[in-house]
Length: 92
Image (cartoon, rainbow, N blue to C red; front, side):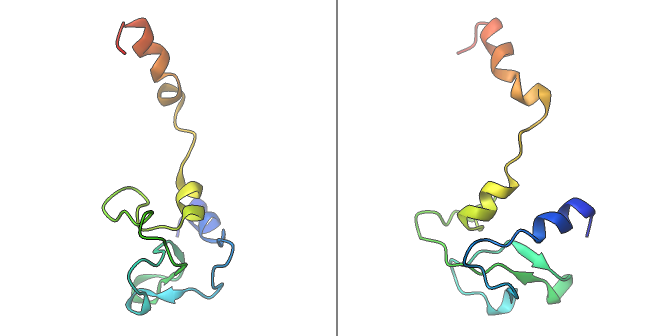
């Protein structure tokens, strides 16, 4: 695991089983944020996700709220200033 990924994986969500569970043991609507391990031995958070927050197919959509918020970054300077460029260009 890369250093950043390893650091993120150490961020257990409140209420998360610190051991996690392997993918084969996860039920529907359980957080799939990888905590540790590789391949079939990878352990996932497994916190129950409410149906309204379960959005597989979207970025972080199969993660609990804690892990979804953890992966959202500040973006690059260009991304953070994009709204200013759009305003100057007359786009709304």
